[in-house]
Length: 135
Image 1 (cartoon, rainbow, N blue to C red):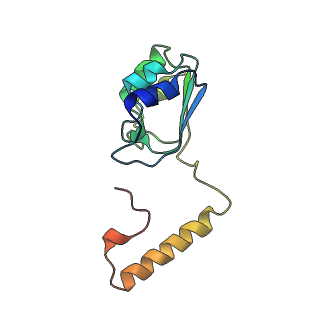
Image 2: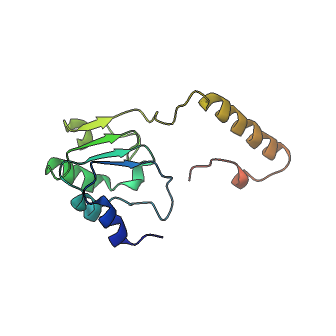
């Protein structure tokens, strides 16, 4: 596991930070005030993983204070993002409708997972053992 100082050292000099990791106890709040302050002011943060990977209030502060050049967010926290949320009003924020996971095989993969989950339940399995649960 990386220490905070290792993460901060990795962020120095980054042009684009792309987050594509799952949400876990380890990754929740991965990017907060310290990490945003470490990024260069001309850096762009891109989050296609999960909204809570980034501290939203700190992200808004960094973008407003021009401590971060821009953010491209396919996921947000909260999600869906309320109409009155300040991220909607910032000219340096690009929000997409949580669709970055789409690939040509997406629907086939989803159907396969659904079929396996139905089989598990029909075979007496627990709902706790289903694939791809989101907590």
